[in-house]
Image 1 (cartoon, rainbow, N blue to C red):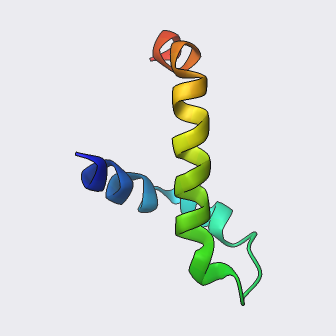
Image 2 (image 1 turned 120 degrees about the vertical axis):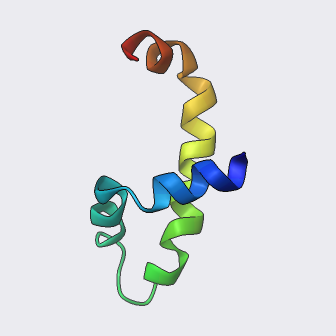
Length: 53
């Protein structure tokens, strides 16, 4: 399930745009860095996310 969600998020247009904020040298690391960020903030703010859905 985690892989499915990562794939879905990685292919989202907003995420593709955020990747462009990384320098050319660091762009290869962007998906990993963003995954760590999402994994941190999603559980931390889970109630706010669920209430908006």
